Image 1 (cartoon, rainbow, N blue to C red):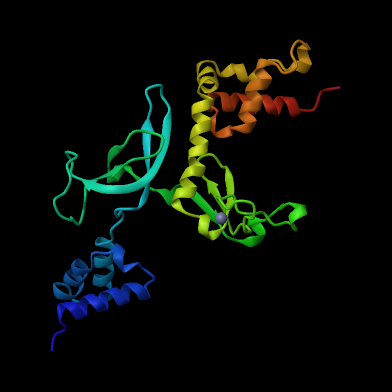
Image 2 (cartoon, protein in one colour):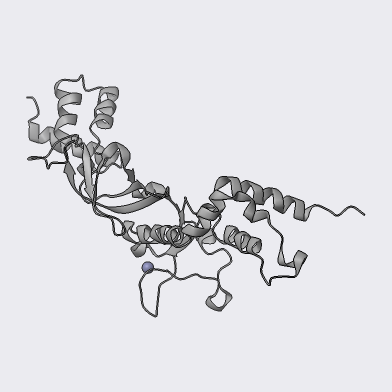
Length: 264
Ligand SMILES: [Zn+2]
């Protein structure tokens, strides 16, 4: 006797579980139809159906939007998908298999309707290190070499379990497992955005004239404690990801000439 639809659904969810996939992220009915009802039930047919009917985005998923500002800055903003929208921006009346756009309301910009083709899974912007020896490398001596979690714990934070690296800035932050959430990771990424906003004038100056970064040091002229060029270089050392490419290149060359052996 042929299996009922209900049995096939259960079977499909079980198979996905064995494959370490989350059944809720798949269109189960469509997989059953393509793999077992219309399809021949082979491993290849199953695999193709599973890949085809994966829901890359669901309501509640945290995503990153890329926003170009009027003064020529690229900003990354994060938030959960609140609902899906049609190409015109209208709501769907019923659930659809392949929605067009997401409505997201990030904390530091206006809300946006963004085509799903243009949003990125939040987690893709981070590298997560879980190896204890790596997470606690160089840890504070007064705490037995163990870093604590930088989430919100009050006076007694637990030990960190992971190190989160914000790929864009290279900044690192240690969290416990409870704090390694899209919300905390996004707030961490927002810090890099705030640096970019606060240092806007410096970035624009270096965009307009990259050679500012190779100007004379205080040592050479003894006029300033810290020459304007020294300040640009301090900025570049502290926020390397914010330095415009031409200035970064000039600074690299400048550093090489500084460290070159002096001819005798
Ligand atoms: Zn924590």
